[in-house]
Length: 332
Ligand SMILES: Cc1cc2nc3c(=O)[nH]c(=O)nc-3n(C[C@H](O)[C@H](O)[C@H](O)COP(=O)(O)OP(=O)(O)OC[C@H]3O[C@@H](n4cnc5c(N)ncnc54)[C@H](O)[C@@H]3O)c2cc1C
Image (tube, rainbow, N blue to C red):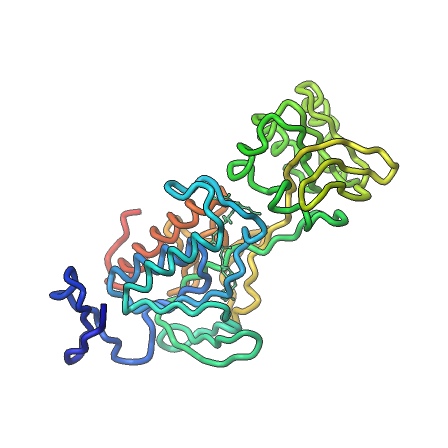
């Protein structure tokens, strides 16, 4: 497939597109800068591109789920490796001459400008500056794991954070739930769907109330409040948890409850509204309170953190951005 330039338009010599034209930008300004090339950003880029937007995706390529070997629950791609899902998506985008994807670089600084936004891009130091009329933040979440020695070595192999994503593979086993947040009892109730042997480790935090502990005990869930000295196992496969008093609990897998935050440190001179947990506030359609600035995926969704949900959010916000660019009301 090759590009044909005729006057102010670009065409493809692809049979389907021979009569169609892709608008050539009259300036170096992109219609949309998508920051983040996970399922949210790539899905948005695909749909924006198909609506003849000139799109630049900038992706540091550090997927949050890189710790795991297989991703589950994405229709037609159940069990796919995280990087493979992205590679397939980028291959699809490569068919569109109006979508550009730059990987392994990040937006180091994003500023507002007269006609939209300017962004400096690079690895550590800026190597390029681009302008865009609108920006989609699809940067995902930054997560901090509970403070347990050697936890990182087990994360994504036998310890996970998303029950909907990984509990099926752990069903019926002796499981642990490790965390320090006040939603631990609710998470324990959820994980109990997949096992009759669950132990909750609160790491010394008083975040499970005595009432919750009694309720969990009634359904066979134990709560242990001492800090963890170490996780025991081999090549990421957890076998036991040793507490600081020497108690050893046998487990065969489990879940952790990380803390999540949206990293907005690259925004320069403006600040979209965030909620008390530091997550971006958007309307139902993904608009932030800054004109021209949108958000989708884990960075914006207060809800299931899942690949297919992020991809759906990307498609939805793309539709909204096209409607906004044309100046028509969005029905959703
Ligand atoms: C261990 C683990 C296992 C998981 N397993 C599953 C599973 O089995 N099934 C499932 O559905 N979900 C799973 N998830 C959740 C899933 O990974 C997320 O819900 C999904 O990746 C969110 O997509 P996103 O596009 O919003 O963000 P992400 O996929 O996190 O992508 C954001 C991208 O933005 C980039 N970025 C960030 N800042 C910048 C910047 N300034 N400039 C440029 N790029 C930037 C990042 O490097 C990253 O590539 C798992 C998560 C974890 C942690």
